[in-house]
Amino acid sequence: MIKHPKDILKLVLDIEPAKKELLNMFEDRKREIENSEQYPGASLEGYMDLYNRTKNPVYVWIAYKEYRDRKLDLPSWILAYFDKAADSIETLASDITAESINIENEISKLLGFSKGKKTGRGNVITKYRDEQDLYLVSLVFASFCEEGLDITYACEKTAELYDISTQQVRYKVESYRKANPGVLDKYF
Image (cartoon, rainbow, N blue to C red; front, side):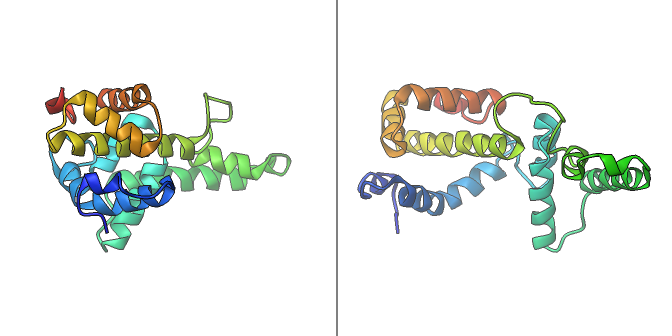
């Protein structure tokens, strides 16, 4: 088990186990950041902010699962998402021309997973994963800064860990900062 960010660098060549260990190691730090008022997902309600900002339905489904896992009542914004989807599916089901449509595509559109036309690279799942990647790289960067490293050295150490360039680290950290104003400002 990794106890300190510097221990990550001692892990053997394979980066995938390092990422798994990293996730375990930073779970407490992640909770601390997520519970801070600056983090957009500071609470379960933060998923609503993420959904409203990104329009990515993955956040609705993750929030749904979190609420259910914790045996909490679902908030109105999640119920509104499912009510809208249910109404749309009911309308589709009663449409006599529905036989000629691709049902998988239509359901995907109704749930917000597809807009019916290409809107850039990837899909809502890959966009969610990209957002998580920005978050994890930024979290590692922030942990190195917390250890007292300056920005340049924190970028270098993060780049080593992820086997990416320092420019990519800077890009990811800046992208995360833009999407989440104020979260990483104390390091800059």
